[in-house]
Each structure stands twice: as structure tokens, then as C-alpha cells.
Length: 387
Image 1 (cartoon, rainbow, N blue to C red):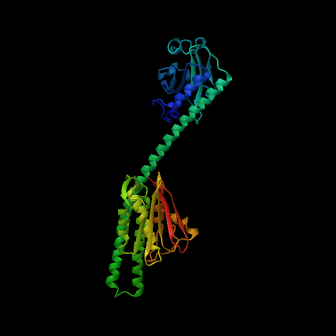
Image 2: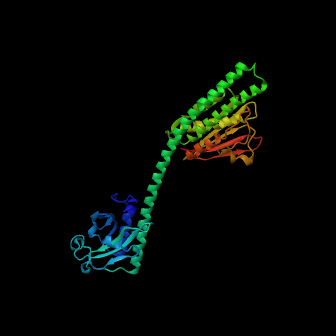
Image 3: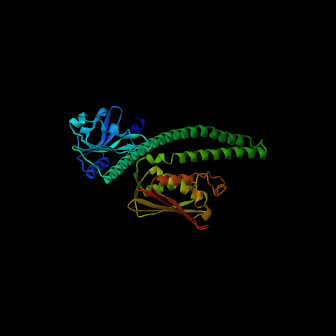
């Protein structure tokens, strides 16, 4: 019973996959009736009933209840009227007049019989060896369907548990990020205040120690922010896609950086709008532009954003005029915490999270990302987003 219930099949609606098998079984064996019968504690219930209207009968009348006692054999009754087990059975005396019966047990992976695939006739009958083999083969197909159903249910349960766990981790990340950032900001601010007020009293070594406290605190704050963005990369894509003006998108991205940096961001596209997740595209471009600025070796940072479309995807690239990335590092840069430079041009250490976050967002959006670069000739990130 526990094994049968694990399939969650009892009292489900008819399905064509099962009905097709009973139709084939009846056709092969030349009988008017074929059933997929499952036995619980009180009844035999029919997942498919070809040739009869009933959906179940009491267990005490079930021929299948006898068939499952020999799970490795085909159970055949040539004439139930002459069989002492069935001659007075209501199913033999009255409708549906079960005279001939042949049933192949449906056996689960645990070796326990769940029911049968059976064929029934209103008169005595015989099956050839070929018909018996075919009926046995069809019974295995029934079990394949049941196992597939069970695996799908287990997969759905696993996905639900993962979603619940991910939601819990996301909540934890938000709380932890807030609770960690607040004291770190305080430490950094107090260290800066202390340095500014007592720089005339402290010697060079003392000032250097305070600077280390400030830098370490700021690096840790950046790391926490990066981890938070990475952990939320999938959840931000739950938002609906929206129609985004490329002109506005470029203006907004440029506005984030032009105040502090000499940036020339150019759009190359025949499109005026794209239908994508707004937060997702912003995160992708902000991370790519940030890297293009931080690791650029030119006075003016030149960035070109190109976007075109196919029937299914947007094809995008972001190209800069920086120093380029050596071939041996071009796969490594997308892995979380991987860094190929000790510091950026401002002397700050990276955390190796930005490009990993970009890759995660792109792939979750049904796309892919690659990089093309030669040393001294800039870098080109090419990515696609599903429409």
C-alpha cells in the first residue's frame, strides 16, 4: 500500500497514454475489455478501462487480487464459470460477465505488485505465446509511465524544497549583509574620524595602521555587497520583462559613471527598444562598464554597446579600449572569486564576483556569454538574452 501510494496515481483523471495501452492490449489479444487495475485496501481501481464504464469494483471480487499473488507470472483463467475461485463471483454471474481473464502483474522497482494490465472476454478464450509476450511488454510500458510519473513528482518536491531553501538563504543574506555592513561602516567612519582628528599626534606608523583599518573595512563592505548581488542574481529575474528604451538605458548607465570618470559610451544598434528584465540588463551593463573603467589604461574610456536581434534572442556586445585580457585568463574570469589583477587602476582590490554575477544573470535569462580579447587591443564581451 505504501509503495502504491508513492505513485499518487489513485483517483486521478483518465490519461491518453494509459488508454492507448489498454486499447492496444485489447486489439492484440482480441478481447472486448482491457484494464489497468490497481489494488488498494478496499477496491480495485481502474486507471484505464477499455470496453467497460466502471471505474472500480470491490477488492473481494477482483481477479487482479489473485493475480498479484504471483507477481512474476501471467495469471490466466480460461473459463471462470468452471473455476471454483470465481464461479459464483458477481462479476462472472452479472455484468461485465468475466469469463476469460489474463492479467500481467504491474511490479514496481521495490519488487512489490501494485495491480495488473489485464484483458477480459465474455466467452472462454486462449492466448498464444506471442500474445502473452506482447501483453507482458505492454505491462512494462505501464510501469514505465508510472515510474516516470513518480520521478516527476519527486523532482517537483525537490524543486519546491530548493526554492524554499533559496528563499531562506536570500532572507539570511539580506539580514546578514545589513547586520555586517552597519558595524563595518561604523569602523571605517570612526577610523577616518580618528585619523583626521589625531593625525598631528600620531606618527606615520599609527596613521598607516588607521589607513589599513579603513581600507580593510571598505574591502569587506564591497565583498558583502558583491556576494549579496550574486546571491540575488536569480531572484531579480522574477520580475516581468518590460519594454526598455535603448536611448534611456544608455543615458542612465552613462549618468552613473560620467561624474567621476572620463567615459564615452556609444550605442550601435538599429533597435530603439528591447523587451527584457530591466533589473537584469542594468546589473549586466553596470558590472561590465565598471570593469571596463576600473581596468582601463587610457585617459578616455571608450565603450561601444551593440545590440541586434534574432527571432528568439537579443545579441549584444560591449567592447572597450582597455589593455585586453590574456587568452589563459579568459575562461577563469567568469568564476566567482577569481581575480587576474591584484588591484585596479585606483589601487583597489577586486572581489572576483562581478563577472560571475553577470554570467549567472545571462544564463538564467536563457542566454550565454563569452569574451574576445587580445593584449593591447581591448576586450569584447558578447552575450545573448532570450526574448
